[in-house]
Image (cartoon, rainbow over all chains, first blue to last red; front, side, top):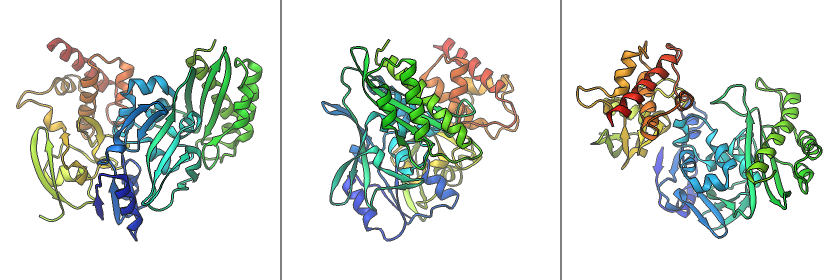
Length: 285
Length: 159
């Protein structure tokens, strides 16, 4: 196995594009090393992106906040400004694994691993986050919901790497939240999850985004659910409409962690609860 | 020596070793440097027996490549005691009988130290969350939590 640690994203992209065999990006390694250990992958090339300065940045500018692809969960957690602006996104990422995993795992890794139950993904999609995708010759900016196409599959071409996640600028009264259901208190994979992000104007919901996890092959952005609460004060009737829209958007599987019926119902319940938290965080009453 | 040359710092000492690129840091630490305090439990990041700090960050060494350690600072359980003088956490693990078979103990000590370095007066809940990535099949955890509470008290007294 060839191990490379380039210092620019373009170089990293070219290395992967030029490799004939199996090539992987190494960020936190919390998925890749498990794949290697269990024999699921036998890479010919591993490109460590942690020596690329742009991958390690958390930068807030006039247009929003840029989080580098190699920024670990624990670094997100120690960034007070980011936690204040996007508590839901940070909490969602921090739910992944133990403190040991948080020391390494990244949001972009979570996204590219493309598990339907990835915790940070519904929160990022609800936030309206965009991924900066860098290839050997071009770069493009893509909404996060366009990255995963199915379990373990993404829309990235060979040699394309996500350099950063861009969260939009926070304006006015706004809040986000992410909740997941697991049968224990810690260290588990979401049975169902929901991320809600909203802004308020004159006490009413002005804009909203609602995204569900683990209820289909990819995270599901539910526009009808958002529409149900826009213009409301999150009264019971709009919340019920939102929950119904969430349940209607579910297309889950039954497995040992939850049945289709259970996931479909709980998706609505979690979305309601997450919406209430986001509303409160935005200063809503 | 074959493999890729890695220059790193382990418990404050400069260390050089060579390893294959696909070797885990856990294996490098045990087999190349002889630091057998790092244990392999699951090898997939679930049990925490191989916990170390990498540039001060708590990680599972089974989920790090040996070659990634180049230029970084590693802390293992072997760095906890000051010569013959045990770290308060080690003392309190003994006083509280917080171990039986001992396989998980180095990982618990390293994780508990990482917690106390950040938070010198954690609540029981904070301790339990911080140690959620470390599995013990002997003690039932309660004695471990008591030991960490006692050590945190000792450390606060010392200051």
